Length: 95
Image 1 (cartoon, rainbow, N blue to C red):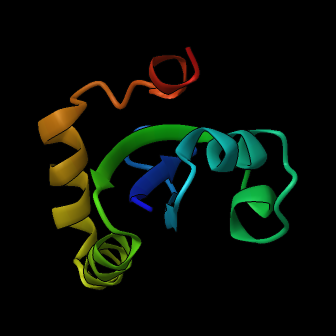
Image 2 (tube, rainbow, N blue to C red):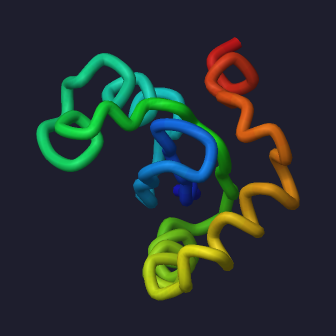
């Protein structure tokens, strides 16, 4: 089964969260509805601003681990390369 790495944000260049999942729509929905306790719920981080798909979950986990080690500026540059307006991508995946 494949997997996804995703980045959520509360606003442009605000707080972010990096996660991994095998079901992107379900997981982002859980974050948006506050069904997951922790950082995203506490800080109201709900906007999907970036994601990558992988053929194997192990590859997604490796990428998540790598991204979590990146400097903040590198993460912001990655988001802006693919989503310069930091638009919420929820509508793109929830169709």
